[in-house]
Image 1 (tube, rainbow, N blue to C red):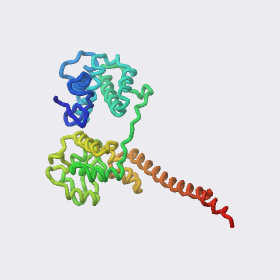
Image 2 (image 1 turned 180 degrees about the vertical axis):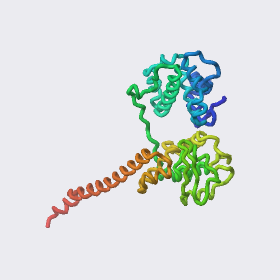
Image 3 (image 1 turned 90 degrees about the vertical axis):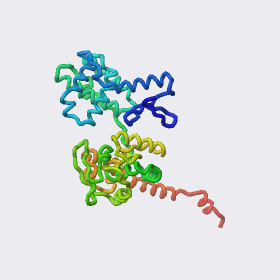
Image 4 (image 1 turned 45 degrees about the horizontal axis):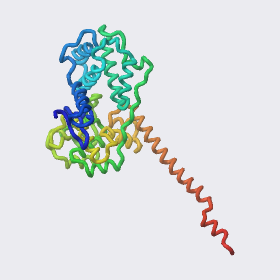
Length: 350
């Protein structure tokens, strides 16, 4: 069946190199078919059929044809917005924009409570479209502006830093092309999308050039000796440093993320994700005593984010010091308490 991928005992809707959702039951069952059709429908792009004027769908189609969307946004951002709007139009497409209220947006968000990042992203995209439509007289309100309604965004969990044990297991057991990706992520502290674009020609005189797509920053990073050793052994089968199992460049960061995630699951390391490597880099740099500016020079992150990691490292060091003192005090207190053997010795007849 097209777009169906089986992994172990589970089925997934897989398209464009990415799993878009788990399919319940088995092929042929009612629940399987319903979820398959639901996900498949999100790939029917807005604009394939003209929307009725005055509807949310019409506002979405108008936005997707606008200069703000086509000229001002990068292709990667356009792709993300299209995906979000495909999901939003399922719930709100036929309604007039001003029929949609904050309570409806919150109801949609509540259904996605298990994936807070996805929920917040959908609302953010919806807010952008409403803001655009407001200036053109397509709507009079913005129900996705939750801040104005005194509603806070859902809290997100943080990416877990990799442990030394997890790094060692991955180095020893993962496929070589994925180990190379892990080493680049660890030693450079960059996003997957930036890593897959690194070319061999970007390596010069012990330095490696990275241009961050999100920020536009150009970074020249020193290559640590362990990474230099890994790069020296890596096969040069393409212009890019990172390649897939066939030796060709990764098509998108999502494709790499999926392959990386599958490998982590297979190795019993499912609690970790690729982006956690970037956090690992920042935290270890902070633990090593690097300043905020030094860490930011490597990762390209904002001072606020780096400060967050620095405080986390400081707390960890303080906790370690406190635990040593606690253990020492516990042992000292325990030594003062008579044991059965000392009591017996003290009461032996002379």
